[in-house]
Image 1 (cartoon, one colour):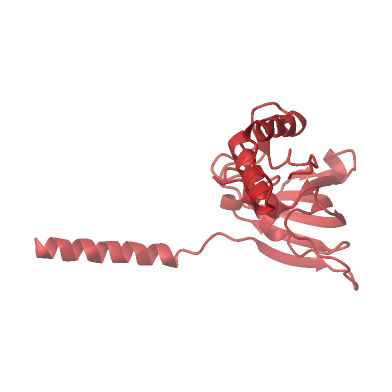
Image 2 (cartoon, one colour):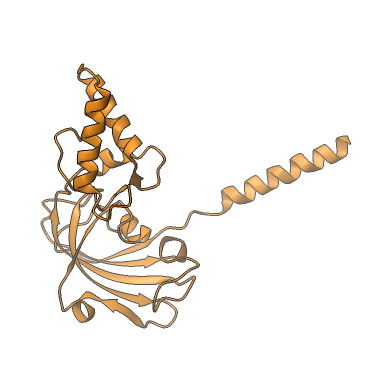
Length: 211
């Protein structure tokens, strides 16, 4: 019995050690071009205007380009809220306007086991990305994370109500349940664009005095 327990403990230790030795997937970043002067660097919650080209690493084939497939127009996206790929959120932090980066994104930070469209499952992706403009996001990334209690990247009415209650209490205001209910309904009426009962990170744009 004692030998069995010792073996079990040893196996658990070895398994834990192996798990600890397996590195987390990460994006490889190569700066292809950088401006001489950088007035501002990107951070979570910023809106970024970019041109990009995406390639499959295995054969170098182009699967999407804003120059060719988007009427030549760049795209806006919000950094750090999983609006694009996890690899973009990791690889485009601290970027300057006028900077160009090459990102090599492993499958776990791209489209994973499912793939998408022209992208096969378990594909490593290469992106060349030009940053054209940075703007302040409509609401801070930190505020969304603070409200998103279960980290599912969407806000329920209970989460918004809990946040409002906490903010009211922080400032010494009287908590009125019926007032809060009406406030939450008003917020969801304006922010829940697809009316699915949740406010996604992307829908988190309506500037309400209480949020």
